[in-house]
Image 1 (cartoon, rainbow, N blue to C red):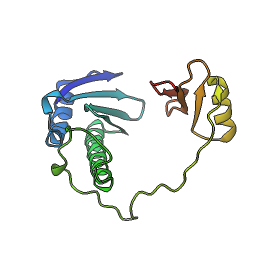
Image 2: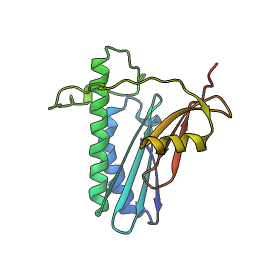
Image 3: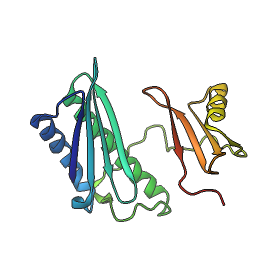
Image 4: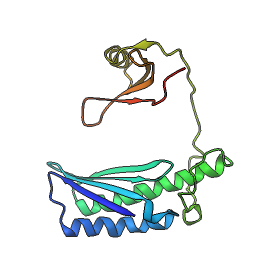
Length: 183
């Protein structure tokens, strides 16, 4: 993997960089195209915790995990564990979908252990559909808050794109917007 390691409110020392690269190198076996996989790590220091965010850019989809812990090196271990857990979940979903989910030729599934589930399989417990009304971001936020939800899906009135507004963990709002407009 190619590593890009940056720090926020903390200088990335050689020790931090080496620890990240050594721990993340364990994940190399999961990727068929190691030299082309980019891994971006952001290490940040907060008052009482250290935060490690890792994004691995695969050709078909990114893998992302973040962990906060008072101990930076424990956070690095935990973020790698979290990424490996995501890989197990992806493999399990791929096995259950009978090939309907395509991740291209990026992941070496033979190296990933099966996910161990104790509560049974993941199941869709509710399906909901509704007409997307064109509205402004302000109206979407107002409706989201009125419903008491963390997110709200709407049709952006400015560009006719399906959009989702959500409440960010660090405060404020975020918007995820489809790149392709409705025809």
